[in-house]
Image 1: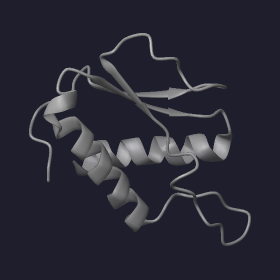
Image 2: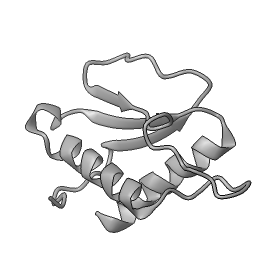
Image 3: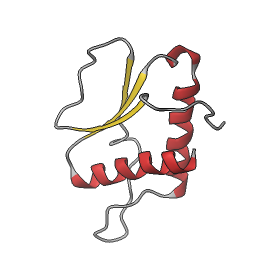
Image 4: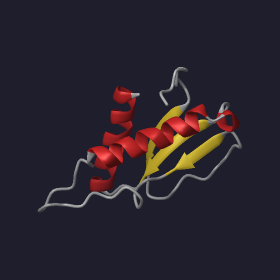
Length: 99
């Protein structure tokens, strides 16, 4: 499924020490820090492979096209760990290019 509606003012990326607190019922927060984890070959830290990129794109697309979340803003948050931040930023950027 490919998203056909614009995502302006709907998709955000946050990096902070703690998960954000939901201040509104019109927000959906998610984190991939522990679910999509890079398996290093040596001392490297990413980027994640194409299978994980595809999984991320499909999950974000599923949330954005779900009628139950049509008025929600979607926030992808990550910790301040530089490895997790780099991979989270890669995934969101890949989603924006691919989808």
